[in-house]
Image (cartoon, rainbow, N blue to C red; front, side, top):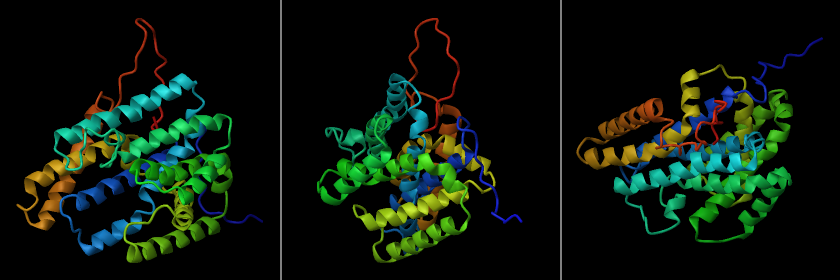
Length: 330
């Protein structure tokens, strides 16, 4: 007699694009952008909105980092030169370009004289700097299991104290990256489990998110407890995401997440300078959100593959290419 296991996961072939990853990536990057749309225009965010986004802070960037880690083995199938070039073209390049954009639009925390600024310090672009560091270390997982880097990073996160935001962010969010790289080795087994354990993970993580938002505000970092509780939520979300119906517009955003990520803050800041204090607060938020989402969508639609977001691929004269698309993680 068969037992009911619920909807089957969408287990695409290894080389196929995993649409559920695009779905999660799109949702996570939009949550980041929407939070900044409320946080940047006014120093005090309405209490209910602040609480909601504080609760979601346990999942937004952790999910993005975890998904990149899941795809690490796929990226490492490429020759080392191709792997490195891809990360420089699609992560380092937009990091530099959009750091310069922040200087041009007058971002208050822009410090072009500091090398840390060009690694994202003082702006939302820190995520790309951390991702670069993770991919650099990730090369070593060709010879060393990623769990080793998770354990070493865990110990370093618990013991190392520094005032450098780049180091702190790398030690913290890098753990989600290498947790994802570790999980990739057992992902199929996890996705074939019954729903009870993933659901329990989500319940525990949700309870933690509610407690954290109420007591701590923005989710605390650099401690083992919030790390493990947040990871429970991420792996639970991954299990259920493979069973959700497709949401093609959100998958589209996920495939172009780099555009939304790097461009949303300049749009928000430019509109904030123009309308904050002029329009009523609700109208300010509405205009900021609409312009930010509309501007990012237009950039993604018409300039997504341009030099604004990736350095042109260098080819020898007269040499043909195979036309293979580069993975969304760079």
